[in-house]
Image (cartoon, rainbow, N blue to C red; front, side, top):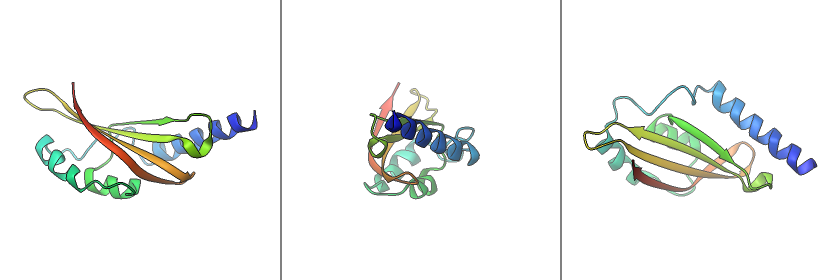
Length: 113
């Protein structure tokens, strides 16, 4: 029960921090085109902090926090989307955390839908 409460508390803390920073309402840098974003994503590296990713690509359009029941094993996902003549492009960056306030890049992938 305590683990569940901690996970819920951690989720609430991260969600509040993201909302306070305006991440949920913002999107990627509006001047950044899909092709520029694809090029810039080549600078993504495992271990980058969320602040470094935000500096590189701007704020994500969507966020998600997933937790498998252990507070230290959750993942934070940022999703960026761009309009494109051939259809939208989407980049998902996944972060892991060793502490509640330090998220680092674990993986990322491009998708079109």
